[in-house]
Length: 95
Length: 317
Image (cartoon, rainbow over all chains, first blue to last red; front, side, top):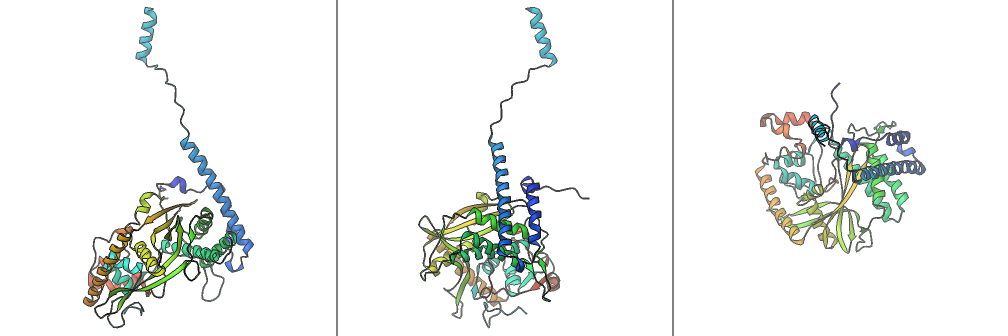
């Protein structure tokens, strides 16, 4: 098996399970001879694709929100190196 | 022997009289590529997926524009466009058997991403601020095939003809624009749009719109569609063309046509060996890399023939 390759926007290009589920439900209509498709059949395809667009848009909005949310400033961790611990002990014993 | 072609001079072999943006673009890129693809009509045995996808995409949206111009509402016009795409991508064998869908091995450009892109595009621009221009004859300016005799002539006095096909003329903020749609796999950025200036096809379209429809055209409105595996994303940009830019393009067209006539009289179209790697590589690169004496064998093995006749077919996407 060859190693998988990546593309610059691979994450964006991967379809979500939800999108895949919608695609599955479209497969029957897509596999039909178009001459046999009625307008309501095609309207179902259109509706399905509109729903998948909404799902994608919602996912994008969530992603955009996450990206724009300011990150909490982390409190500085106490310096517990051996050197600073020894200095602290010296200070305490002097006082 | 090249296939018969009404766009060429009847007695001077290789002298093209009717030019569209595809043949002009091929000639400007590389005279040898032009000789092989346009004059001799060689085409790869396997058509590029980008070309197939682009043609279906244009045709379906053209169907939408057409339905809308007849007063059909957005919902029904969308159904018409999807039906067009599904029918066009259903391959019917000559024996009248059921046939089957167009099978693309490209994960980005295939039948399902095509239909998705059409529906998403039409919804994205359902409240389009660009209004279709009404022509002087009262008809909406959609699906416009054009041809006009230029003031450039051959040495024997025949005028060169310029021809092509415009999707739509639109009005936005009181100005007229040529509308065009392009697809790409890459994310659409200002850099992507910047590649349309200078741009042979778009300059020709703007010039033609001015000449044929007597509208002062400010440029183009380009709707770019990024086709990814799980989504299609759209961006729109105005690509301006000033009067002086178009005049310059036209003047240089005259020089290009003179050069094409010269090569036809010489019966020789030289290679532009600095263009072989453009856009993922010229399809004729492998042929041109062989010694001249054996190129015909390679052409016969790798390509098939069809006539590129701008007066008969629509080629621009």
